[in-house]
Image (cartoon, rainbow, N blue to C red):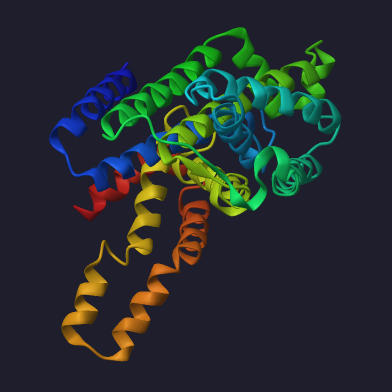
Length: 331
């Protein structure tokens, strides 16, 4: 009950946030956070609750994004239809992959999902007559203000968390967790593990593909290296889950806030503080330091994951009691 009250308070706060924080830059960051809540929640459903660690988030994200973009580019249909169809097309891509890959387990399934993302990236790059290749797909954004995108992203993120809660409260959730804990034991009591892994994969693909379609509508431009990126999409989805808490309902939401904030701190060199200090002091050292800091987010991600695994193996949400005790000791 307490977690429900906290979640409701957080939702109300997010609804009111853009009415208080009107700076477009910070609204943009919040839109990206909410997109990552959706992507991370979808990944967590497959990996955290069903035990199928996947590197294929980029494949489904990119398929959803291209579905929205190509509807507009080739058919002149509003890219917003991609919000309804992007997730469906991602599921259609994921279904044959799951049928082929689910007999594999552990690292072999993870490598198969990694290959799926690379196949989709290469296909989008080579098939220029359909995808425009490296030229990418450009559409005109529907809204000038960021507020509509923010509230759509918020609805999508809240809906994804609600889906996970409903799944976990149903028989489906028990099947997922039984497969995660011991697949052979689940099979021995009559659970069709392939069927339920396919359902979990389909939910993951649908949520991630829908997030990709919203990204296309929001950003207005995509190319294969942006939306099928292993590091920027697939690895980021895993980091969001690990930092927030794998196998927890609200872990990906917490992880999304942390990872987007950390990425932006490094990308902007402390929100421009280091650049301003470099101009004030002068000299080559500060300029070089600013340049290296702005490119060091990958290193920071690695250090953060190592620290989390060593200190909080269940993530911030999963080990919240341990975190709260540390704060009490510090105070």
